[in-house]
Image 1 (spheres, helix red, strand yellow):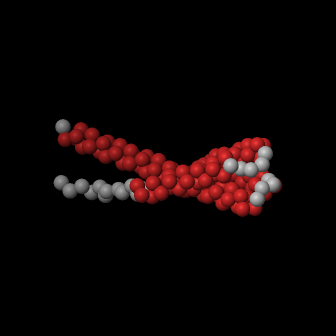
Image 2 (tube, rainbow, N blue to C red):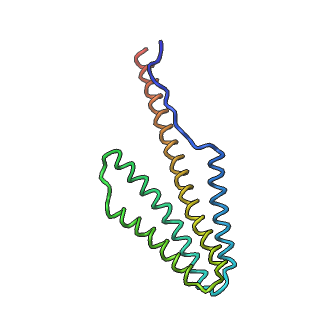
Length: 163
């Protein structure tokens, strides 16, 4: 008996892409940590910049999740909480703005400031890519589990009617 079920394919990122994303994020963290560890000047400046980098990093993950959830809600016709969108985008803007302001106001060499700025932006962009990669993997896992569940239900139904 021929099956009329079409096979579903769950798209996944390649291992090479996943490795590149993780390595890129690790390099960005290393570059930022190195720059902050040898930051000339006052300890208060260093503490402010560490907090700023961590704040930016956490808001990147929250923002990427909120954007993805908003897209999913729009596709399914679900209502989205408008205040949450404002909080998330506002938090990201505040984190980036305060960190940039702190970087610009520090009395350090312009070359060092450029190093810290580029490594900070590299950290932010690689964190967005990492968040997307992790979310894609999670959604692929959910899709595969759903497909397996449907296949198992079909097999059980077929086995039940054959008896």
